[in-house]
Image (cartoon, rainbow, N blue to C red; front, side, top):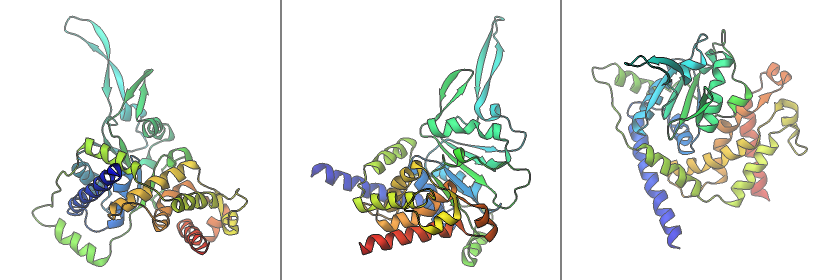
Amino acid sequence: MVDAANLVADIEALGEKLGQAKASITNRFIGQERVVDLTLAALLCGGHGLLVGLPGLGKTRLVDTLSTVMGLDGNRIQFTPDLMPADILGSEVLETGADGSRAFKFIEGPIFCQLLMADEINRASPRTQSALLQAMQEKEVTVAGEHRKLGTPFHVLATQNPIEQEGTYPLPEAQLDRFLVQIDVHYPDRDTERDILLATTGVMDAQSTTVFTAQELLDAQTLLRRMPVGEGVVEMILDLVRACRPEYPDAPQIIKDTVSWGPGPRAAQALMLTVRAQALLEGRLAPSPEDVVRMARPVLIHRMALSFSARARGDDLGALIEQTAESITRTQAAA
């Protein structure tokens, strides 16, 4: 009972601290509360986020603000077609000492940080994109045969322009699967855009304050994994992920007719973590089936692909995922 009471107290304290962090973030990144929640959820789960949106919607500003608020050492890489893996990871150089001796010295690249912004990640060649695969999964890189640990914690927030695709290299499925969530950044509504206009065209720019430290974020990630998840939520996650696989015999017919390939087990793991983060950000002690519905689109949309005929019809994959999740919720409620 004492352990349970301590867990409740720790979760409530973390919820309050997250409220302060959100207030500090929205001081500079106005509106877009859902975008802020999903980005915070990615950090709380120890994962990475893919921010998809048009230029000028504040993606870079959001990542810069997160670096300050969460107390993380941040770096930014502008991905371009001529960027090489060594420009990200670093390289060994031959250094001559004062006595004339020579030795190789490793010069760290910008990936050696705690929060990396990979700006327009799909503009780099596949060779350069692949430099992030080991880093995102194993939190280390291998250079000249030596394993080198990255920052602790280590997170990648990558941006991608969904419209301008000339001269870009679409991310392969293996790399997309390493992103915990895809965060769609849309145009702000009129009132929000008015607030942005007034706040960013004056003499003084709004500032954010540091709320977390790197160690406190690590502690929060551990606490999140201790949050209880009801059996109904676990079953719904399994039902949803398996229903989105067209090869699965019990998948809905619309999935079989529309989806080319579905999500793997990593999607279920991502849902288990993100529904906890969603509950935590709303001040609740445990996730509910409604949290699964809310997190279904950002967790699954980049882990699935429409068939050629579905793309030709203009089908909306996000809407299909939400429809499938809501259908499973109704089925569970009726059981």
